[in-house]
Image (cartoon, rainbow, N blue to C red; front, side, top):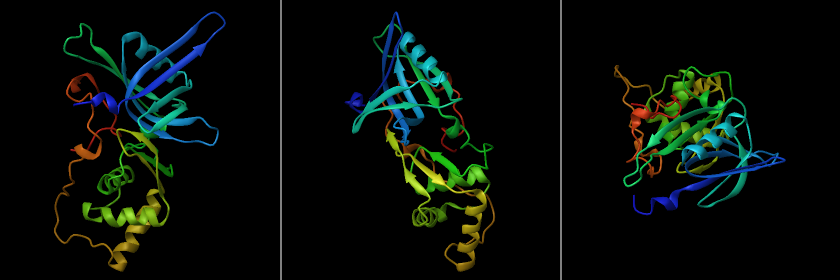
Length: 241
């Protein structure tokens, strides 16, 4: 936790009206950002902390599809929005020596929400918060109901890279990617791989054991102070058990 503040970024929301100016600035520990041609990036995930008023202002701006500025370590300031129909969760963080707890806001885009199992399986894009090969394969398999095993993770990543079906996104505290393709296409890849002997179906039957993915994200500066019971996170953000 030493020098944890150096890993934080900043989210700033400014709005001017004819008689007043709103200027809110909060600290940000997580960000998944995708550049767009119109110059305003799309934020798929943000995690910010601040006081009641600041978090309330950011929450309202996100739900109203407003534009805000984000910056951080190795990230120059850029304007972004979360698009239409984002989802937000708010909680509290108790800080020793502070009378009032900090407020914590997590917001995810509609597209990231649909990445979860049971989401929009017709979409050709899957936004993921990490580029670990096993994590990518697990999430794709969960989303589209694919028959896979962890041992195929390296092969699957090479297929994605060779077909230019995976691209990095901008991240703070994570290494996000977007995977392009449909469940039907991925299943076709698997069938061809098995027929060619590039990947093998296990001879033994039984449950498949996946690795735990707690270490795919950079250490969270808030982790020791957050009460997990304060939050109910969507499946797209929860690591598999």
